[in-house]
Amino acid sequence: MDNHDKKYTAITGASSGIGYATAIEFAKRNKNLILIARREAQLQSLKQKIAELNPNLDIVIKVCDLSQAAGVYTLFAELESYNIETWINNAGFGHYGSVQDQDLTKIQTMLHVNIKALTILSTLYVQKYQNQSGAQLINISSRGGYTIVPNAVTYCATKFYVSAFTEGLAQELKQANAKLTAKVLAPAATQTEFGQKANNVTEYDYDKSFNQYHSATQMAEFLIALYESDKIIGEISTKDFSFTLKDNILPYSGNPAENQKR
Ligand SMILES: NC(=O)c1ccc[n+]([C@@H]2O[C@H](COP(=O)([O-])OP(=O)(O)OC[C@H]3O[C@@H](n4cnc5c(N)ncnc54)[C@H](OP(=O)(O)O)[C@@H]3O)[C@@H](O)[C@H]2O)c1
Image 1 (cartoon, rainbow, N blue to C red):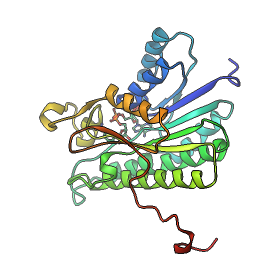
Image 2: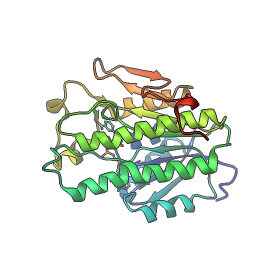
Image 3: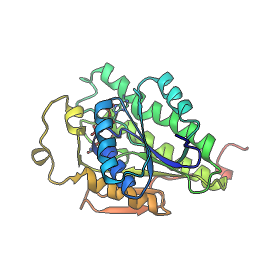
């Protein structure tokens, strides 16, 4: 199929949860999709579901383990011929437990997926699309990317990185008058496979674990609201679980007099 004239939305972590629900929301808005994750069967069943919803779309599946940097570069290179108007770095996972007890194999993989892959893919996307009108990079952080949550310190630190990197990138792109915009979505508790994976369990009850949480579809709708806005951040309040769009949260030293001379 000739994909040169078509525009695509690429979503990492599309095999479940927020990424899966986001793919459906973009499909409803007539967006061709590139669905990325490790579990091919889940991506194929999502592709089938989208084909029933909107048969006119081109849906591309890319199976990739984002914890392997070489594979991340290969993934982006293989998408060279596609015009990707929106790139969503959503893949990620958490870990509940003290630093003292954390399993470093799981933690290293978390650092690779949540930080390293996101940075590589964001950078490659910026390098290629910074001057393309309407291009958007949306990175999924967390409320834990703005507030440290006890028993989830390392996970929160990965999401502080995502928030700082993406807010800083958004400022840098604005100052450079780039056409690409970078945005951050910061979900609070959302019913997905996250709870299972973060706690290393096969069953996880969100009703028992949280007073309030959103569904993945609600979170995808918030992501769409961020996508359609000219704001940088879409944040869930931990106080009342409301969704707010903001220009920035982290302090930014935009005054050149305070920084290294260029
Ligand atoms: N749910 C929450 O309460 C919550 C709150 C705040 C932020 N978030 C963030 O939201 C994002 C989406 O998570 P979710 O809640 O939707 O959880 P989820 O249902 O577990 O989905 C995570 C997605 O990431 C993918 N992924 C994980 N490791 C990967 C790897 N090595 N290579 C490629 N893909 C990988 C998974 O696909 P495969 O397993 O098929 O590879 C899956 O599609 C994450 O960044 C998470 O940190 C979630």
